[in-house]
Image (tube, rainbow, N blue to C red):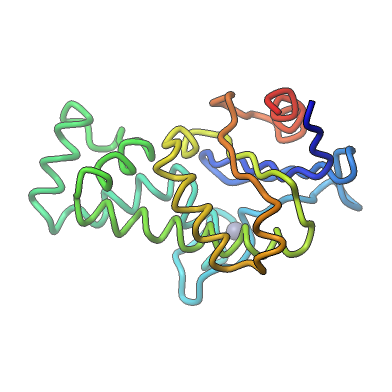
Length: 195
Ligand SMILES: [Zn+2]
């Protein structure tokens, strides 16, 4: 069995949480707040975060942020509004991050803008973490990860672009088999069972 001792788990749900396994052990930090990567600052003049600050990763790449941005941008684009209505059964407020990724893949320009921002800023955050902890694997969980390869393949390319080749080559990005991750430590345990 291939053993990965250094793993980063990223839960992309309503918020964004993270968990780390370093040298085979879950890393908690001094006050158990290690892995609060949703509040990493990634964008100057970025949108407001749930914590009240601006430009945090969570305000761009959480499931809630993706749906909200998509709905907000679509009001000026009737074709996009029609597409949202089609995939949500006329309940636009229910659009999921996965549906936004699908619409982008189908060629919707607004969805593509939303998804490009997610790839861009999630890529920056992950590339920075990769340089810090040199993980063998990054596991993406939560509703946004349901987008599967539509998320993972461009994200892998982005990490390769931003990281030193030697460190980028050693990290695999995979999707968690578990769609809901209520608790990050529990999620890391589940994620390790995936490996
Ligand atoms: Zn924040």
